Length: 369
Image (cartoon, rainbow, N blue to C red):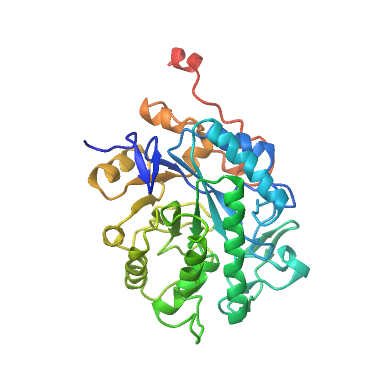
């Protein structure tokens, strides 16, 4: 039987209704305390026809916060808020994973406990500005983590996974891309440590491996995914040999039995949105090295997505802005219905506008076509 976007997919023991994944995209609609809101529950419920929803990035601790109004998973109130979100998605027959994140140096002291300096593998200041409650401010030079502190952050991921289980999430995705803390350890442009967490690929992977070890003690390993962005320049990231390094990384991950590998295939622009820049990575080679499900992401439209599924390049395709503007994206693709236009000015912050007010395709529209 030939697979396409609308055939059933699978991640571990989970049966997906289709192969369309809602990609994780921050929208900054939580309370200032990081508690998910009823509006967020409505937003995710509207998009529950996706084969799988991966939530926006969820900070695993106060220290992990990098942006205002992002929903955490480290307090009882936040966990209860996510339980309401998960229940609304499940009520529509949907599946939902939480994306666990620590921003590392992509933060600002105003977000940190006691206004502390953000942490990173190495004390290297990123270019650009941080988004704070008071507006944009220059990034600060982070403080390099002590080894004992790294163990503490691994425990933060464990506690976050435990809270995800309490909130009813079907699984979790560890965010290892886009210039955040795990990615900062993986790439040699941001990791200049001389201890067991720096140097060669095996050492730079140590932090990630410890996180995966502890998270898979809470969730079955096939309910845990990983996000990577091998050539992403966003958040002032670089690597001396991304093809070789990430092939090595994926080879070392292959034995774990993870539920999936979720890959941003190219880079992002300064606003954080995917761009179709020329690729420097052979993603076909990466995909062949990973034995589990492979989720491809990079501004795929329906045609490219179908080609990727039918050719075997990917098992699932994640869509970002298309799902934001089209809560009924699965139906629109199935029936070749034109898509709503995306309003980028409403991506972050605010209320229902550009969040829950994108209309599904109506019978009246169908009659007018």
